[in-house]
Length: 90
Image 1 (cartoon, rainbow, N blue to C red):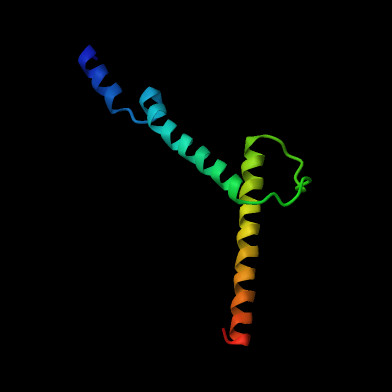
Image 2: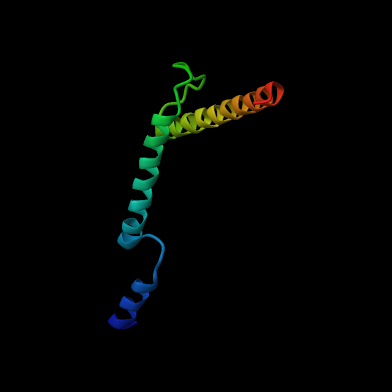
């Protein structure tokens, strides 16, 4: 294998390496930014939370679970308000 072919093989490789890390970094920063914004929007339901796991994965899981519960609560409120509006003819 000549030096030229080794360079060509390295250039084609797509998994791993420094180039893949550079491409992945902006995506990770975007996800972290959006999680921070979601934390600001979703109110904290309780301190206990029921889960005893610790770590970043547990925090993300808990945040997404709280967001899902909050969305369900908002949808229920909208349904109730629509029915009240239909009853009172507004």
